[in-house]
Length: 214
Image (cartoon, helix red, strand yellow):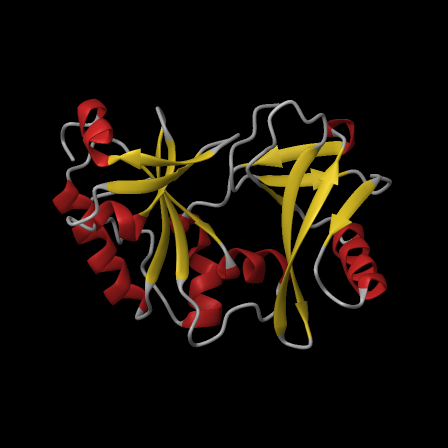
């Protein structure tokens, strides 16, 4: 088992979990989490705490039409399976049915390895209305040697295609996940970088040393 951030983690029905939430009604949160898990729906693999034996997972619940983020901790023994988040082009039927977005399979921006997470993923998984008119489309782009121009054009094309803001991260195998907006901001000298076990500020100069096409 070697999951990465944003991977989908499916737990056994009898999993023993610890729930972390700032919501006032802890019993409600626990019942909603158990209901989600009993439906066989996954949690999200989060940044881990080094040397901690339990896994850190995340989950977004929909309570009275408001999104509530919850943290969970669970022993790895209770993990049933794990999968990467779904690729954008494989969600054609979902986007066509719910948002009138067609031709995703033939729509090929300069960057092809693009996964979906955030509100659209939770809608896709649960069928519940996690997405609002103001929701961004959160994407995880796996960097594959593209130039800054390619990445910029990709975001422009996706913004036009989906008619909503595009947010998310670009994954670099040597460092971790960097916010799209920070990466494309030419004035930014440092970017936030989230890996499997740490969050740090990374100098763009160091990033460019390893990825000169940027």
